[in-house]
Length: 212
Image 1: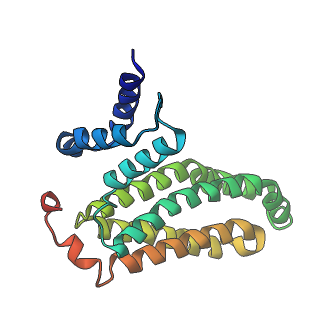
Image 2 (image 1 turned 180 degrees about the horizontal axis):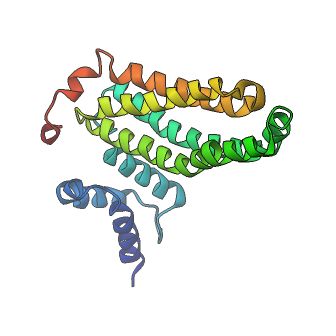
């Protein structure tokens, strides 16, 4: 196998990350440009080059290559929200012993066990699902689907309820770090809500998805 054919195979593997419709229309042209601008004697796709191409593919899958700036920033915030949800999970697990120590003065062993079973375990188990919903809605909003905005509103309502429930259950006293982490997620969700319902974003959602 020549160096040129090996490099071309490498580029094609990376370009396979792009949407099928885009590849059918533009893959050969993009491949020709990549081959023409490759370094002399280059045999493999560079790590930075691969990362840049994959990031471009991700932007296209999320609709970020054609979204207005307001939607683009909202999609970025939703992706950040997914990461922060996992950060909340880590915070809960790391601070669990300190939360138990703080609560044990006012909780009986039975009450603490009930709190673990009814609150902590469901929160830990559900966090990856919630993070997945953030990413799914980031994709849907990036595509401009009209249902994506009310769907994200519903998710934001759940986040709001979780924060209010934590306040009502005394998280500010027993688990301040957990409550702060949830509060940061709530702020990110609020910012995304403002952006997707802004005047600049609204026309994007009124288009037919097939036309976008």
